[in-house]
Length: 454
Ligand SMILES: Cc1ncc(COP(=O)(O)O)c(C=O)c1O
Image 1 (tube, helix red, strand yellow):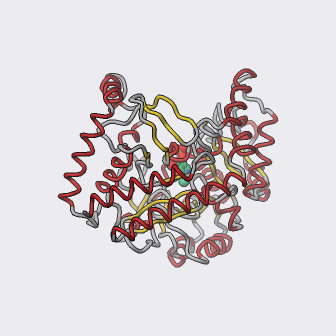
Image 2: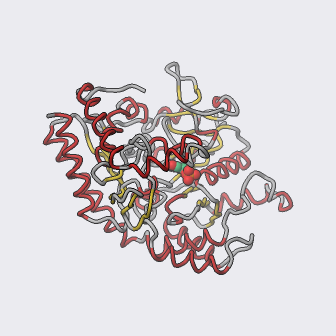
Image 3: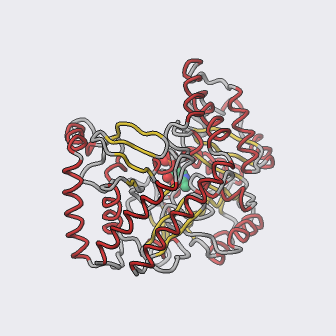
């Protein structure tokens, strides 16, 4: 990965060594658990992404509540990672906990609907403007299912994604472009089932001409996008870009799928609700269950009417869409409570100004310490990036990533009671986050940047 050096690397290495030492001394119990875990868990963690936490081992959690986590060594953290958005509703929001407790006693799963599913579908329809919904366990599943539906419905084989996208562990989306423009597997893609050039075309975010070219031969079933890139760090759409995406997809008979799993941070209806976008299909997962596994996809009545005659009812359980626990009672109870009572418009009205406060605080540090960085924000989500001008494509953004510097800033913060997302500097505010939590980040970020630039 390219690294633009915006700081002195020797100083960074020295500071990093001191912070690793500080973490190790302050987290002996987590260290011991990690050693024990290595005997039964690969690399001592239950899921491979957890090796990306900035310390020599991750802090093991004792308890989480609201916007805070306490580790087994007794340290309290302001949590801006919030389970990489899985806990965007805050840890253990009371309405979700109450609904889940109630449902646990009434039957967890039974392959039959409950009225919670109706309330959840109605809430989603109001937020996103699409009338018909289906539930899944994860956003990955939902993306896989809508891709299959789009291919089935259009009879076309290819999908289009943005370069440097992430939509979950969905085979078709692990694609990027080589310097000569060929579609190749993206960096780190593990065991692609086929050459991604067979399934996927890749376009640059904010590049209308690129999309025109990709859709011109009308071989593409669907364009699957986040309306702002988030997983390579926030890259916002330029004025008119998303309108152009909609116009070109309509003109070429290509379905438009919007994945709001992360961009829900823009407001109760994500960017679709906020900006009046008109997808044919929409996917969202993670946040909506308040921490209970939950994903969903919605569609227009037109898509539903066109796809229904193509699927034989006797084959509906073996067609490659759905799952035994998808839409199960515990999950739909959690979605109903989380959307209806936690991630409300009123909550976003508090979360977004707090993310603005985070943005202002971090931007002031950047200006005061005179480093060539900037802060990007989308609603309740904000991040610092190691380049002065906001990039307009995923590859421009990726070129300015600096994993060593990121890791140092996250470790410095963690050592002083602030958790940042280990993947992309993301700071997310929840309904439980306070101004004091945000100011704590500004304070430790200032100290870190001061140490780097002193
Ligand atoms: C935009 C987007 N879509 C889908 C997913 C997949 O979510 P999950 O891992 O819960 O399936 C992610 C995960 O980070 C995501 O960022």
